Image (cartoon, rainbow, N blue to C red; front, top):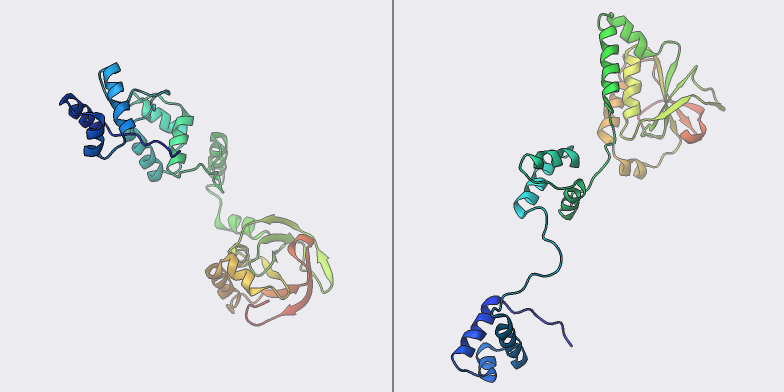
Length: 270
């Protein structure tokens, strides 16, 4: 047996109207192109309740109207950083009291899901206060102070990784042939950002070198992007002003350190 289809209110009212004029069930079904049993059901419902309208079903109505739901979605698209708690407070001013779960549920229904920011430069108020205090303390320092601090005197700034230069390491010296030097490494992301940092350190007077893995796959580089950033960094490397730049090839990945086996020159293309 197929799924029953709910008749519209207008059609039910037409059934009652024809029935009150004296027509039978079969004549009504032929005129309105519906089954006799459906006509009988509508007439019996009208006789018992005096109306053919659909009665309220079980379950409560939604807390938020369609207008309020559209406003929530519109505000979230306008300001993606807004939280459900902030939206809850703004709805209270409009005399709409709902929970944060209700707000998030309406956002998810419209394809807007919560995400955690990749970078949080100012996590709490204490961090803002500490950074502001440090900035005020160092406000009157001369430019050589910042150059010395950023250049990291006494260290070679070595970018360790593939041609994308995923990791940055500070080592006491450059690795020799067949030697592995483990430095303090930290992840800085894709897109040639390590090369950019290395260029900036070289501008400030630090010794800089790029250590990359030998025979890196070009298709892998294209998949991970960062072509423009890498080209801009390499343009600085090939500049005659940066004569202290050297490029090494490594037969190991960045996870096990840089084992420099050959001092190379020429265009980029490990």
